[in-house]
Image 1 (tube, one colour):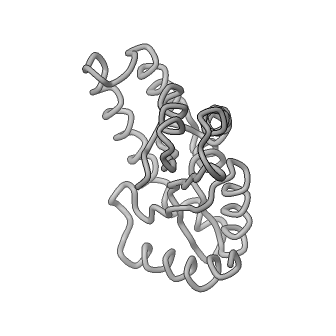
Image 2 (cartoon, one colour):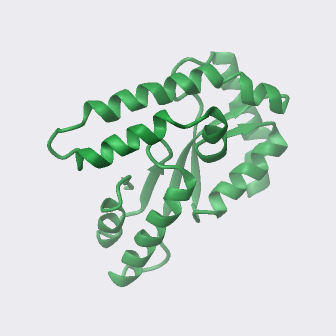
Length: 179
């Protein structure tokens, strides 16, 4: 069993429970994630958990034959995805258990103000097979993730052919290089 976390308080709580961590890049970007994972690992050690902390990262992945296609083909879908996510974050404002309203509002504001270039840099892995090998290797290494869960169509707007192409590139050209 893995437990998701996305607020500064939940990362140490999950560690103290001795649970492996499952995190996504909807609310957090890679730079914020580093700090939260540091707190998770410190709490893991301080609470006497055995072995290394177990972290899996969920990230949108898109493969295309060229870097330009990998960047541009999913643009509308990812823009929609993050717009919809902001609506969900804002809908939780004031709800019990949703966390401090000012934090949720700041999160929504941060996402609204992200450029597509920032999304590409901090929240997704898009590219050709060689670029994805580099990007996923870097992303897994940076926060120390043991594994990656690829989201092939987080917005629901990509075609079946686009998802199949990404899956094919991942399974034939990217994943085998990590074994």
